[in-house]
Image 1 (cartoon, one colour):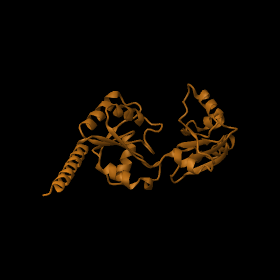
Image 2: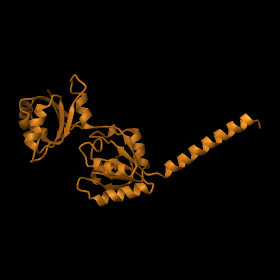
Image 3: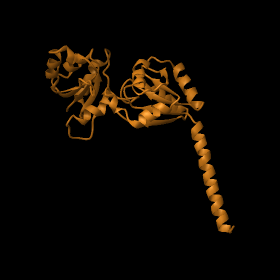
Image 4: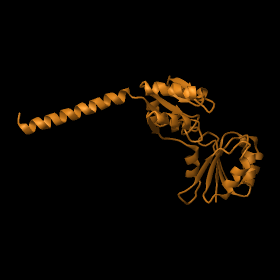
Length: 246
């Protein structure tokens, strides 16, 4: 073997050894996949998300009853670990320890993308402190779904999540009305009328049951949309996403 051939051979051998070692290390390293799931229509679950859910060791989810429906629909059988806003730090420690031991997990919210107005952000924050790898698996979100059909020119909007239930609610809507950008918020069917009253004179785009069978998108002032919802009880069901125009 010539000298040049010797160096080339050894260089490639070292490179192959490095990548094999890295591959072995990655295989033994814990990882959290932040998986977006459908906000209504199960056909919106991406092939990549389905592949990840099939391969992880367990799934941390907001409500195991909701996630079981997804598991059943796609023929999956995985260990489900509940993780929600009332979870104690002990639950975070349990998930962290399993990932540090080399297991791989998926984080799911009830619908849409985890950590957006969702307690999953708390878990991610703690896992980052432990240098655990976190990989996003993007997909549906009520936030971007409504924005995509709003018909608004511009590149900016302000997302404020759910309004406070009681304390700070009035101040919250004052800030919404004062915003120089369009604002997107979420609201439950129990408080949708109060929200529309606070936004009665503003032009809105309101999405109800987005991507589901009874998906409805309302356009008009808060007062006009409130009247439409009051006219039929069926209009009051489901989760609401509200875009406030400027």
